[in-house]
Length: 77
Image (tube, rainbow, N blue to C red; front, side):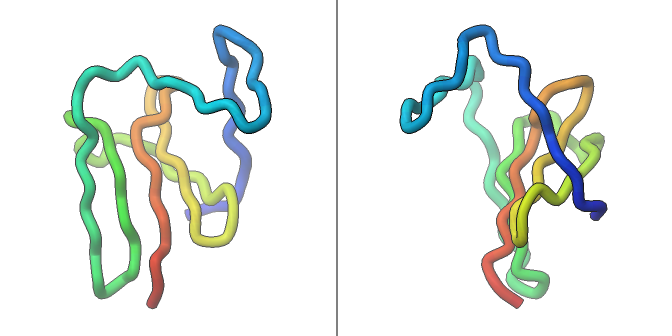
């Protein structure tokens, strides 16, 4: 997955230390591949349509149609 940046255009300004509520009523799915060490948190219905961008060592974000649809965390080898 290529390194890069993901930019957000929030409805309200971001404030350091203040959480952002996601307007997503559905429960996101969690999958872990012990062999690769990647943990994926993804929105329901995201069947691999997302484009992944590595935003930091061990952290990737998946986007589709200008929305964040998955977050990937590398937990180990």
